[in-house]
Amino acid sequence: MSDRLSSRVRRSTLSIALALILAASLLPLATVAASARPAPARRMRPATPELIERAVRRGEITEARGALYLTWAFSAPRRVPEEYSSATPWSGTLPLLELQRTLPELGDAPAAAAARSTLRAKTFACPGTTGKLPKKRSTKHFYIQYKTIRDATINQYASALETTWKTEVGKFGWAKPPKDPVSYPKGGRYPVRVENLGPGLYGYVTGTRFVGNNPATPWNDRDAVASCMVLARNFQPFPGSTLDALRATAAHEFNHSIQFGYGALVGPGSASNVMIEALASWMEDEVFDSANDNYQYLWPDVTVPMGRFDPGFPYPYWVVFRAMAERFGTGVKNGSEKVYQTFWELISKRKATNLRALGKAFKSSKNITLAQAFHDASIALRFLVDCSITDPRYCLEEGPAYAAFPVKPQFQHPGDHETLGPPQDSLSRKIANDFALNWIGLPTQNGLEVHVTNDVGKGVLKVSVICLAGGEVTVKKSATATSTSAADLPNLGLGPCDEATAVISNVKMTSATPKKTTRTDYTIEVI
Image (tube, rainbow, N blue to C red; front, side, top):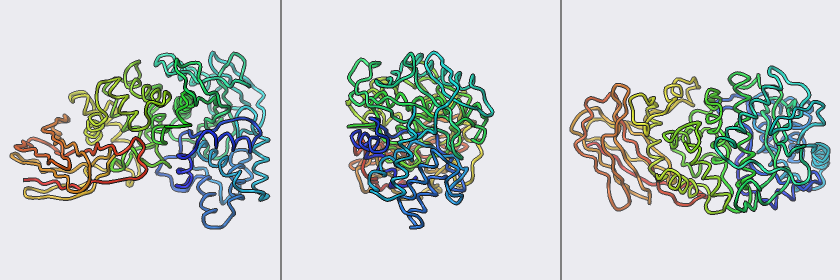
C-alpha cells in the first residue's frame, strides 16, 4: 500500500499483533507480515488498497472510512465504492495486517466500529474470510474448503498444494508448519480456503494462533505461529495461464506458511519484507520451474541495496536471490534451497537475521561469502546468457528467457547504467552500501587500464571487468577498492569483446538490517 504501511509492517511485533487480533475478533490469533503475490509493477490503475489509501491521504475519506472500505475489500467486495475498487491484482496479507494494526487506534468512530464488527463476524477458519464453505477435500497434508472453482478443478488445487508440500517439506526438508493447538482440521492437516475473493485479490496466508515452539524443529523456535491459507477461486484474470498462476501461488504461499512456522516473521530479529516476499517468489521456481509466473516482476532496480530494497514492493528481488544461488543446483535437495533453508533456520534460532543471516547461510552451507555470491550474481545479471558455454557462476539457466520477457520500457533491464568512452575518460557516481551494484560500459579495445577509487564513504567495491564474446561471459580481471586502496586493472585486452562492462558491487554491510540507505562516492577512469 504505502510507505506508512511498509514501515508499520517492519516494526510489527508479536505482542502488538496479538492485541490487535484480540481487539478485532476476540480470538487469540497472531498475524504477521507475509502475503500473496502482488500485482506486476507495470500496472496502470492502482489496486484497491492503494486507491483507498490515496483517498485517505487526500482527505477525501476519513481513516476510519478507509478501514471500513478495506475490510469490505476482503469480506464484501461489492460494497466497496466503484471509485475505490480496481481489478488490478493485489496481495492480501500486508493490507490485512495494516487493517488489524490500525483499527484499535481509530477509537469509537462509527466506520471503525463497523469494520471491527465485520472482522469479528468473519473469522471462521481464516481471518478475513467470508463464511462457511460447504465442500471439503482432504489430501494427505491439506484440508481444503471450497464452494465453487472457476477455470480449474479441485483436483488441480489439491495437486498443486501436495506437490508443494512434497517438494518444500518432503524433498528439501524444510520444517512443516505447526498446527493450531486449539482448532485444527482432522489429522492436523493444513487449512486452506478457496474463496470468491474480490477483484484482483490473489489470496493470502495469515497467522491463526501463537504456538511458540514448532514441534517440527529440533530447537525451540520461541516465536512459531500457526497459520492458514486463503486462495482465490479463479486465477484466470492473473498473468500467465490459470494453472501456472495457481501452482506458483501455492508454492509461494506455502513458503510463507513455513516462515510462520519457523517464527521468522515475528519477535526479535524477524525477517525484512524483501527476504519474506522475494524468497517466496524465488521458491515458485524451485517447486514449479516451468510456471515462470514470477517473470512478471522483472526487473528489480539493482542500484537499490538488498538491505533496503523496496519494502512496499520487494518481489522483483527474487531474480537476484536466484542468481546468487543457482550455481548450486535448482529444484534439488541441498542445492540452492539449502542456502535459504539455512537462512530461515538461523533466524528461527535467533542466531542472526537478514543480511547477516544470509551471509552465514552462504558460508556455512556452500563455503562462499555473501560478498562473492552477490558479486558473481551481479555479473550474471548483466548479460543474462545461458550456461551452455559460460562458467555457471556468471550465467543463468533462464537468462535469455528473462531478457526476452516483454515489459514496458520503464521496467526493462537497464543494461549499463553509464558508459565510458576511449581513454582518458572518467565518471563519478554514488553507489549504495549494503549490496548494490553499478554496471559501467567500457570501450572494446586492447591495452586499457581501468582505475576505480573510493572517494567518500566506507564502501567495499568489488570491481570486475567483464567481456562478452560470442555468447560467452568471461572475467578479465578483478580488484577491490576501499577507503584506503584503489582498484587497478591494467593491460586489459577487450578488443575481441562484443561488449565490455565494469561490474561494481558495493558489498559493505553496515548492519544486518540497515535503517537508512548510505552511499559511497567513487570515480572510475579508463586510462
